[in-house]
Length: 88
Image (cartoon, rainbow, N blue to C red):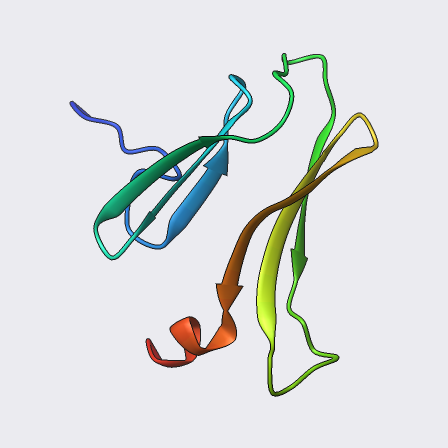
């Protein structure tokens, strides 16, 4: 029986956009919570986009963004590709 639940954005190297309109992330055991977009309900259509930044090899950033009902909400998270390269 599962007695505890860990959600996206609550464990290391994860992120989330919540129905409250906030974004959450945890990196290096540090939890961050910020206002990001609009609130949403189960009738809304959400999409998540991952930009791996392949155009600029030297200054490559990984960007995560979301849309709500087709409306772009902007970049929610941005990471240096080096952070992930160091983990492999």
